Amino acid sequence: MNTQNLQPLPSVEAIAAELKAAAAFIGSRVINREEVIEQAICALLTGEHMLLQSRTGAGKSLLAEQVFSVFEGARLFRVQASKEQQPDTFFGGLDLEQLKTGRIIHNTADSLVESEFGFIDEIFDANDFTLRALLSLLNERKLMRGVQSVESPLHTVIAATNYLRVNEVTEALLDRFMYKAIILPDKDPFIQYKISQQYLAHGGRTITPPEKIPFKRLQHLYKVCRGEATDLVISVSNEMLYFTNIVIRHFEFLRNREMHDKKNTGATSDFYISPRTQAKSLDLLRALALLKGRSSVVHDDVSRLYFIFATVGLPEEVALFRKAYTTVLNSLTSARGFDQVTVLLDFTEILETLRADPSKMKEPLSNLSNTAIRRSLVEWLKQTFGNEQPKDRNKMMLEQFLKDFIPVCDEVRELKHSVEQVFTQTMIAVERELNRAS
Image (cartoon, rainbow, N blue to C red; front, side, top):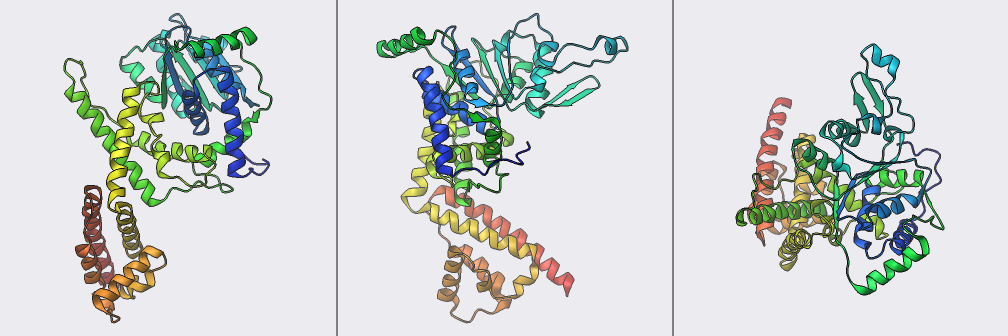
């Protein structure tokens, strides 16, 4: 996405305020859906698609179109799916002259292919042939039909459905929708009163916000959340990265245990989080930090990764993710486990430095002490070996450091085991290179 010639981004606090104002406007129109609105904004910030499921008349279309309405300068493609439709409904009509020669060529003008936003109502009413044709456009942002290959500017599609239809094709389609939410009818009398107020004022129509966010700004923020921008960086520490992956793995374990414990569910496969989805959770972490006006990710951001790993609106799924998060957080916090994680991860960076430049193995280890944690390693060396630390004993000293390192919890114990394996592999590689050089 080209973000050249853009005005400089405002401060991260100003961006957060702008996005908060947009969410508040949407929330004033779509009552009591704050969490789904925040989830939708995260989908837009990370350039992913979103699926809304509810019974008829719960306001899915209004929510989707009101979300899109807060941005200007983007084309919106709208369609209600049906079983009779063919791919040309989404891709544009076929060029009849080309079809006579056996070539499938779509005229993509004004189609989903040429749009930045898309809203597909009742998506599972579409036939499997059409849904299969949509897969590459949703995932690769490219129309690939016959000999035709067209790059698409498609940023985010929000699809709505009253039901799920599960087969091989629709499972692949569901995988394209990183964010999923179920909107349950709210029968609280006061909430119904607020909804009625909005209906009397505006009917079922979307309304124009007082201020809009330029789509180019959204593209720029997308690059920020992807870690591709240079003017605004949302940092994710090594400790936070490791913590995130432990939480995700524990949630996956809990979901599988829950599925196996349930009887007569008809489940035939395990719950699985793909490496691709796990990697994209980092984009969401940056988006969540951005929404809070922060330039770094904190533990609490990890607690909201259920936006992609669970279905918002299903309390049991959200609660299970929060349980995974709390369990891991408490384990690492109770005995200063985070400090130990940081030490071990920093130790692996020392190993990476030695592997990249084996000659540094012949230098004092104190030369590698350019961070606070590494300085603590030097202090340990002095306490253990005194001021005299012969360079030819570097391997032994590093090995002793790991041997003396006592993990305070299972998560750190597992990490130490992995680091020990990395240490062994690194020393073999370093010694081989040093022997070759001599």
